[in-house]
Length: 290
Image (tube, rainbow, N blue to C red; front, side):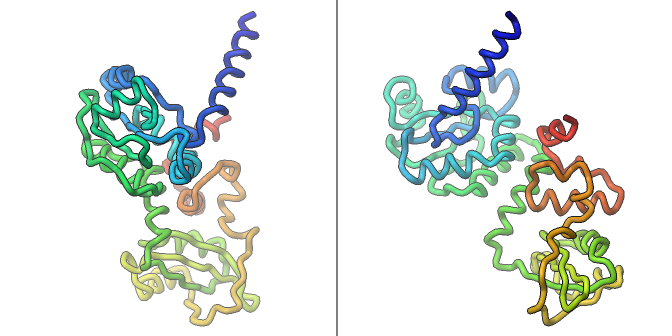
């Protein structure tokens, strides 16, 4: 009988989660304002208060399906905050909380981060529907409370920042072994991605780096330490998919769902006999142990 009850509970939980409106993503939200305040006080965690239109417009649906569904975003919000969703197009308790914060009804997603006394910890987030916008708000909130965001959090922020960074550039280096070359070049300041490939039969590593954090001259000086030579003309470059992140692909970490920067740092840590787990989230570490 206990087994049957457990099975029914699991099925109920999965069904309820599957039926969650797409505007809310994959986060397990609180829906009771007073209960969220009480939990915030007991656990000493800030509340992520989402005002969301449910069912909502395309912007609202995209916010749920993309920003609020990324596995690391879900983990950050559920583990470091008290997630509370208020529907801005409903009556009753939702409308009361909406009025309490003077928020407009039938509006695009708005995020507030508040404490257990309902005070704003950071400025209200509105008009920015990007994952980076939300992460930067959460990062600001944690730092305001005197907390340092965990490593995996910071890597996700850095990766999203690089996507629209006009200072990101590519460089190519020839070497005797692109497995070790990729590990070495990844350790240079400002490097956000490395890739093993071939060029006219030669082993080559493609490097993406932030030119504001490292110049091509300084990157080349670092490359020379491992006998890597820069290549000016790279039109014949072709990626070697089976060799890129070789250390990672031949480890137990390969089965984990990792972001690009996590892959970069874990591959480098494995190649330099360092501890890779520092770049994982708690849930990824748990998954690794199973």
